[in-house]
Image (cartoon, rainbow, N blue to C red):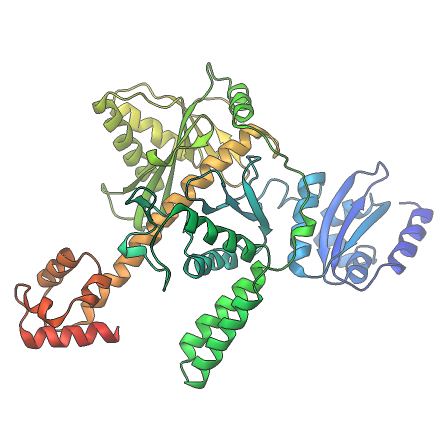
Length: 490
């Protein structure tokens, strides 16, 4: 680095504002070396050029980068969320040599809506794929976004990805079954037109029209606090924070770096990249979900002609073992899926995608050996670097982020992941609700099982009158009265 360059850099640093923002370091060829974010641009950028022997010894990589810097650019932002978004966007755009964590790493979540669906659902995705879909985001706070969607479900009575609505009349739908009909005072049965009105209100909410909702939550929170119901008040406080974080106006930093592609283009590119003999019109993808080995479940999602075919989605409880073993879980669920297709005489998919690396892929291949069946074309998609892995000796494949084939695989994988996680959450929720009875003294395990079998859910059991309860085998009047009072309090 020449003295002239050092002087020019120092002069540029003196002009930097003491504001939060994102900076991009360039070499003499105008190539981006590094993209970073800062609470104070002036202090952060200046720190790279301080003669610190400790910095040079401890981080030689930084020293090597600094020696190549001849200029930099910066962008001021208003918040940490905006800085996160812009930093991620620029890293993906420039792919700087000295950024190692975000080049091909996790992208921020978007909310996706397909207006052409009979009952449009709100889904999470990390990729824009289809032109006619609506997308909201990106949102840097994944946890807050998921909580906000749950709030929206109850506030507006909308469908999320895990819903399974049922048509019960010529133009009438039941949105959720009894176990998940958590829509407060909103009707669970309505027409398509009435549901679409809900969708439009929910879309306005996502676009930032949240003041009235936040004010209402604040009023309820203060009321609970006055009554010293602090646990309820803190729940509402968390909801307020989630909505505020989700609705921050960070969308102006969204860049058109991804573009739109058609299903046909995606499939054609996938055929070419994987050297397939024919277009993969039928693709199935598997994912495993568990919490430290508990509630281990699997999902299988199906895409036909590049689009989700949700009627063909399947979910599985892992039955062959208890614990944490993704390989055995993959082997079991792949065996069960294709053993069934084999018995029914149905055709296998053109392509199977396993969410995972080479271990999961080999587990899936093992399943076909058990079935004594030649497997379809099968690959794995490893999350860390979105690496495509093969069951044979071919080298791993890393496609560019904007590649239509990779984006289709990511869409498929995200669907499988979301479907599996929701099934896992559903089982955990059901178990938690059922465990309420364990705290009631006076009836044994068999009687508890009979009650749950008869009423279906704890929610239905709570609705039962004392007269109904005494009709059940082994439940006397005193026990029915105590049980009814117990359920009201829990």
